Every structure is written in C-alpha cells, then in structure tokens.
Length: 204
Image (cartoon, rainbow, N blue to C red):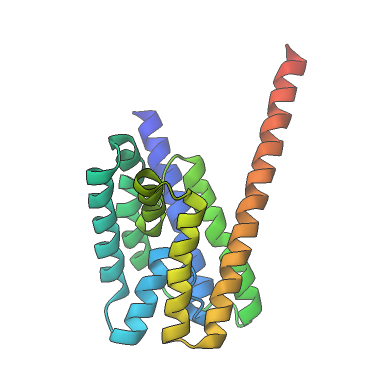
C-alpha cells in the first residue's frame, strides 16, 4: 500500500514539473515544442479547440491503442500518468513567469525534460506522443528514437504552419535543449548510482 502511494506521489511530481514547464515558461511565449500539451495549444490557437479537450482525447486514444496493441505491462505504466496529466495541465495556471523569451525557452525546456526523466525513473509516462514510438518499434521495427523524432517532426511542422517560421525554429531549438537535458540527467543519474554502489561496496 505504501509503495503504491509513493509511486502515485512520484508520478504526480513528474506530471507537475511538466505542467509547470509548459504553462509557466513555454506556452506563454508560444514555444509549443513539447508533446500533447503543445499540440493542444497549437490547435487551440488555430481552430479554438480547447487544449485540455485535445489532451484528453489524445491521451485516452493513446491509452486505448496501448491496451489493444501493446502488452498490459506497458499499459499499466502509462495509465496513471496519462490520466493525471490533463488534470494537472488544467490546474496549473497558464501564466508568464519570466519576461525573457530566451530564458523561458531554456528553463522551460530543461524543466520539461526533468519531468519526463522523473516519470521515466518512476517507470511511468504522461502518455500522448510517447506511445506511437513504442508501437512503431513493436510492429514496424522502427527504433524508438527514430519514432520519437517523427513525432517531434510533426509538432515542428505544426509550429511552422500555425505560428510561422520563427516560432518553428524556436520549437526546434527547444527540442534540441530537451534532448541535451535528458542526456545530462541520465549521465548525472548514472554517476550518482555508481557512487552509491561504490559506497556500499566500501562499507562491506
């Protein structure tokens, strides 16, 4: 029971970080680079479709595909994060915290990656665009990193079409920062884990 509560708390923290990154730093500056939250924002700007409705529809659709096309283990991992993300995205207010566009770009992208990494370490996901790469790998032997590149490419093209070339370039730069940040977090995590193992071995 305690382990389940801790797991829910970890997933909630990861989803909160992602929602803060989007609503406080990226989306107020029209930097729509990150997952279903960004897609929802772009569709809201272009066709006045409520972004939370878009996130709900996409996450529930991806959950259904996960249940039908992937194994139950994957479904259980993404289930809670997929349901919590639209809720947290609505609860966290859309508010510009920093005036600087560049600072918001860097901080928001790094924070978003931190939230995704936190979910990854918790064995979870916020659903949405993280699901298609797994399906593409399973059924078409397309490596996950290439599948993720394809989903990011769709988001970048939406930025170019809806917001224009400049914002499309900013979205691309944001994705680059997210990728570098993820690699940095992974490297720090590996180093911390090695230090922990060495400490345990030295005490034995």
